[in-house]
Image 1 (cartoon, rainbow, N blue to C red):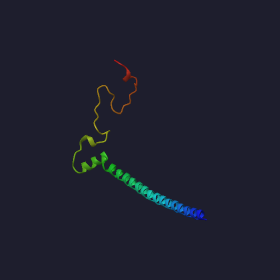
Image 2 (cartoon, one colour):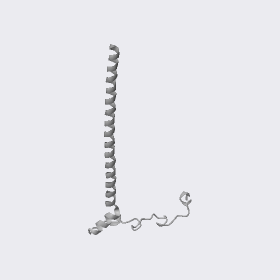
Image 3 (cartoon, rainbow, N blue to C red):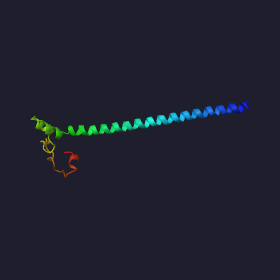
Image 4 (tube, one colour):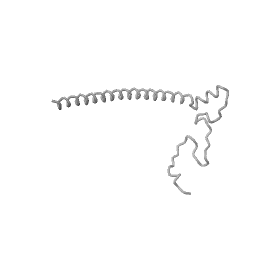
Length: 108
């Protein structure tokens, strides 16, 4: 009879411990989900800020704003097709397609 009472008490304590561990696991899972949602929200906010920074620092936008402020940014802020390009001697003109693809491999 004493053994049966001891086994029932041990089983009761074990079941209470398992129930407490299960409850703790659910709390930790809930906290993890909240933190994950917060991280995703901050990542989205960061992505939105990056888009705003990119729009504000776009070279063409900067050139327009500098010109509106009365400053001259020089050639650095002009679109590539408007800038004067330096052509190496013997190189094809910009915008032309080289048709002789073997020419760079030949030795003179």
